[in-house]
Length: 289
Image (cartoon, rainbow, N blue to C red; front, side):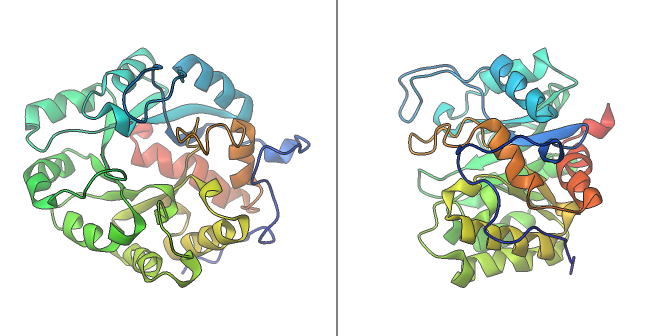
């Protein structure tokens, strides 16, 4: 088990309340934001009436010390991955993408998408019924052989069973939002969260340290400490979740606050560099440049 050096639980930023920017709160050099969104304003269900552009995102990220970003396909766009792919092609050295694809996607299509900057396949079933994962078995198996991973974005109560099935298809898994998304339960007593911690033993599961503000600060700090102890910094990546698409969460924390959330909790420089730089660089293929 990894034994991290952590800040005192409950301290640090959880909202956009005024805090003094200090040198030690800047992200490490070459930091990677592993979960952010770009999209146009529109009228689709759950699509915001405002836009989140790549230029705005990069401006905010650079101020916080992050020059590379993983763009995650917003679920309201469905299988239309045009926005994230356009950004990946515009910034080939600075952007990777995770896209949402239908289960019939072919190997040549997957190869083309990988060449366009796609590193993973998002499975964002937060707001719809969970599919029969067997429909995805062939596609995910091919994707795994191509070096892509599956990104699991589902309610916490389904994570454990889904992980067992999806890992059987031969693909590595990244679990979004600390594994606690849309959970009505206190994670400190949740068997679903304990099952996620046990999945660390497979060596094939990574977790995104994103969406911390969806929990009370004491709970999110506890979840973070448990994940770091179980998975270690080689299986964790950090994401801002900018701009927090939910109306309740939209810009609740500034981008700088999102980055300080991590820096204030990891006091060891090597651990912080692993989570913010080395692990995502390897996982998302930035090391291949």
